[in-house]
Length: 182
Image (cartoon, rainbow, N blue to C red; front, side, top):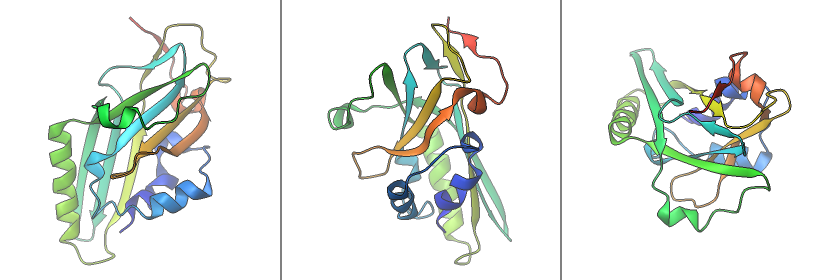
């Protein structure tokens, strides 16, 4: 029932990404059926000149068992990070964090999906997580030379762990053009 472990290999954004061993061990300890995935903090580590489009990036969760499936597509919303902000390491030079969480409605949907998954026979639930980013640029950006990272803070943890580590923006965009920010 450790669906983030399975999901990492299927994460749409992470086709050619790297994951360090410490992160893999920490994510393996996260049980997405039992732990409160609705409370995950997601940080996009981006270079200056690149920004996420407001309320446009999504994280989708699919839980499937022989009895059926449940799907939640949660739109990332700006996170309230007052308690966490002072504990984060500073981003690298020329980079900035954009911190996100899920809306109250999406949190309820995620918890409902988890409640359903917990009613299924032990070991029968398989899961997939997908990430669909949407970005814009405020300065010239070369998608083939620009890297991004996606970091998470696990529930009850104040440090960020990489889900996606220095992936090329062009790969993340899947050939889609990068919009100019308005």
